[in-house]
Figure (spheres, helix red, strand yellow):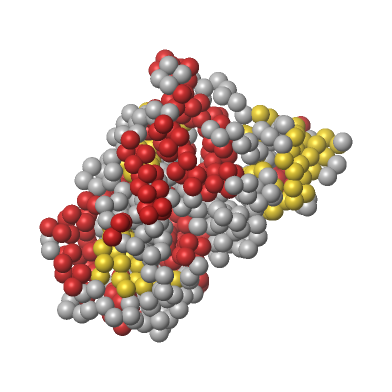
Length: 572
C-alpha cells in the first residue's frame, strides 16, 4: 500500500486502539450525542443537524469535534454496550466528551471503540472516502495506509499520592480513576495534573441503562469522592415519585442511580444549576464540573475554572481531586479566538429577555469550537438569569466551555488572540434563530420553565406576571427547580400562590430528564423561555417547541395559545 506523508503521521493519533471497518459518515458539523443521537437506535435525532436521520451505528463517524452536552459520553457508552456504537470515531479538533466515553467503554467494560484525531490533510482524505478500516495503529483509506501515533500514559508528572493511586493502594476504583485521568491528560497533550476544590456529577440521569451500570459498578468497587461534590438533576422527584404514576421499575432504577452517587459521598443537591447554591464557586477557583450549562456559567459569569468535563470523568476527578491541567484551567486556554460583533435591536424593553437565549444560540453557531468574545452589547443590562439563559443556549450549539462578553463578564476586557476571526450577528440572524426555534404548535398544551433550573427571581417573576390570573384549563405550566430554591419559594409563600394558579413546581428533575407521565403524555404544543430546551425538545420528546420571553410564557399558559406574531423588536 502507498504511505501517507511523514508530516501526517506525526499529527495523526489514535487514542483508543481496536479493530474496525465500515462506511464513512462525515458530518460537516459537530454533534451532541445527548439529545442528538437516539441511544436505542443509533440514529441522529437532532432536527437542527444537517445529518438528522442518519445512523451512526457501525459507521466510521467523522466530525470536526463534538458539541453540546457533557452527557454525550454516557450515550456513547450505552450505544457501545448495546452494539449500536459507531465502528470508530474520527476528529480533527480537540475533543474530550466522546473520547472519554470510548475510554470508559474500553477500560471499564472491555469494549474497545477506536478513536482517532487526524491532521487536516488526513481528515480531508478520509472525508472523500466511502469506507475505511482500522487495524491496531493503522488507518486504511482506499489504497493508502496511515500509521498512527498511539496515546499511552506518557510522561505525566505525578505526585507521590498520584503514583499511589495509580498503583492501586487505594483500591481498584481509585486506580481506574487515576489511570483514565492520566490518559485524558495525554489526549489533551499536557504533562501536568491540577488540584480541584469541588466537583459536580452529571451522569445521574437515567436516560439509558449505561449510567446506572457505570455508577453501581464504581460504587460496588468502593469509589469515594475526596472533594465536596454536588449532583446534577436526576430522572425522578426523589421523594415523591411513588405518587406521580411513575412505573415502579423506572422509579426504583432512577433512585438507585441517584443513591449510588450519594453512596460515593456526593451531596444530594439534584440540580443542574449548582451555581445557584449558597456556596457557588468564586472567581479564579479551580473546580471539576460537568453539565454543559453549569460549566459555561461557572467559567463565563463566575470566573471559576473548569473544562466541560465529560460524564464519568467528573466522578474520576471527584474521586482523586485531580484533573488534567488543560484547556480553560490555563490562562492561555481562556483566550478568545473569535470576536463576534453583535448589533442588538434598538427597541429592547423590559420583557425582552428572549434576546439572551437567542444570542447564546447564535454565538454558539458562530463559534462551534472556539471561545468567542461578544462585543456591541456593553450598554445593555443583563440579569444573572439572562446570562444563565445565554450560557445554556450557547452550550447547545458550541463545544466551547465558555465565552466572554465585553462589559459584563470578569474576563470580558481581556484582549482576544491576535489572529482571532471576526464575525457579526445582526437582526437577520436573530430572526433566523427565532424561526428555527419556533417550529412547534400554536396551541400550547405545556409551558416549560426551568432549563436550567429556575432561580428564585424567575419564580417571583412568574408569580408577579400571573397576578390574579389562572392557567388555561387545557394548558399545564411546570417549573423545574432545585431543592434549595424550592425551599426558599416555600418560605416566601410562592408555592401555594402558584399552585392555586395552576402552576406546578417539581424539584430534582429538569426538562432534559423529564419523562412521561410527569411530562404530560397528551401534550403536543410546547412553549418555553429556554433556548436549550427549545433546541433539544424534539430529540428528547418527539415534539417541536416554541420559544418566547418569560412574559410570553405566562401569557401562553393563561390563554393556551402562542403569540401570533414574533416579538416587535425582531422587526426593528
